[in-house]
Image 1 (cartoon, helix red, strand yellow):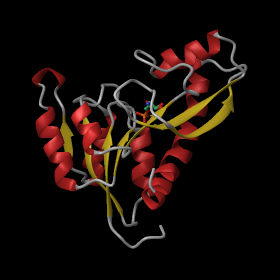
Image 2 (image 1 turned 180 degrees about the horizontal axis):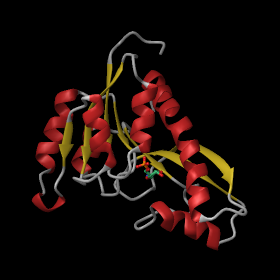
Image 3 (image 1 turned 30 degrees about the vertical axis):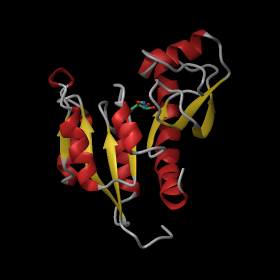
Image 4 (image 1 turned 120 degrees about the vertical axis):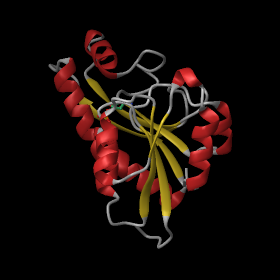
Length: 192
Ligand code: GRF
């Protein structure tokens, strides 16, 4: 890192948490701290990781509609960046307005193709394979009020030919684990 200033990250994650783990590992013993992990799934893999790493967590209950409490916790840690790493719900507009161009997401395909509501996990990979695409990849982008439509920060590709959903997912995860932490580092040092 080229700055000695301490920076906080907030991570939203509701899946297995492999991207969250890659980010935590990348920034270990740097001036970047994972200050808060937020999930809407009490069974999310990220909770185990957070407990191993002693990172504070906040579980968001969709049905209790407690966004105000979540936003208060985020505000408290003064994040430089908010990172969605496998989080499927919409981010409310008041949070987006509070952190303009400071909330980013990773999508497991080359947007604008194969994005939008319901396009997550194997749904994405199966659609890519069914369409006979030669390539797939990842898109890291700014979060706006719609699914998967914000400005692109980075895309990286891999071949999709001959893959099934499982093997394509593995290739995509490799790209994600390499490029997501490095994109975050770039944005922290240079802005979005
Ligand atoms: C990733 O493939 C990411 O692109 C998508 O959700 C998946 C999360 O995987 N948004 P993991 O939970 O980080 O393993």
